[in-house]
Image 1 (spheres, rainbow, N blue to C red):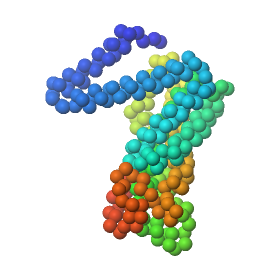
Image 2 (spheres, helix red, strand yellow):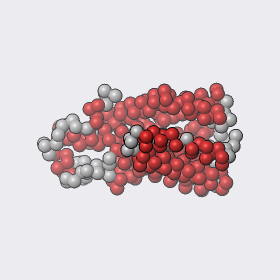
Image 3 (cartoon, helix red, strand yellow):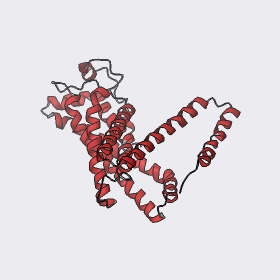
Image 4 (cartoon, one colour):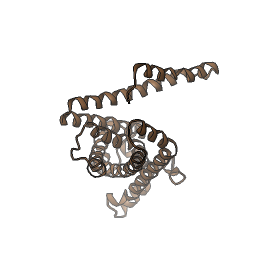
Length: 285
């Protein structure tokens, strides 16, 4: 299947319908709509050019470099969505993202897709990109729950430390909550994809030349991949971030963008409003 220039222009012409509706009913959303469309076009064009270059060059070095770019971009998006400081957590988040992406990605390439050459450009970057970008939402949610919970439950944290608990034991509860948030978010994402996006993705794969059975099986397996990769990435990230997130007195350093107070005030002040974070809505979701 090939798409001609006329076909591309005909597809773009469909944008006239929502633009007309926005102007006709004076919705005042034209700027937001155009920005969203341009952002989508830039992302798709960027990924398309990256994969096109990988196929043309057929170089392992280029594939690895492109993977590192994908991991850095997805890590920055995770930190941004979680509202954290990139200077504090970019390295551990990128490390967890890279390790999880490599392990799960190579597992899929070797055992699920049965590839003898995992660096085949037609599969390496699409699979790795799918794993990396598919973890963004769940990981941002779980990191937000972990650090916001640690900030708001400082009294419990210090109580456990003061009664002989180790640092690991004191944060074990919050670690469980973070992993729970990751699983809940992953399951919601999978449900959303299955209910809304799966038919569209399946039709797209069939249009691209994949038979219906293979398309359905691939979607099912990739949903499992997203859930497993998200949970593993959160666990690895928190292990890597543990040293950089606490000072020598085991107090949480300011990790949120709006943290202006000192590290000691952020964890020990009794005036911190209790239970204001989104963690309390975790069970309701």
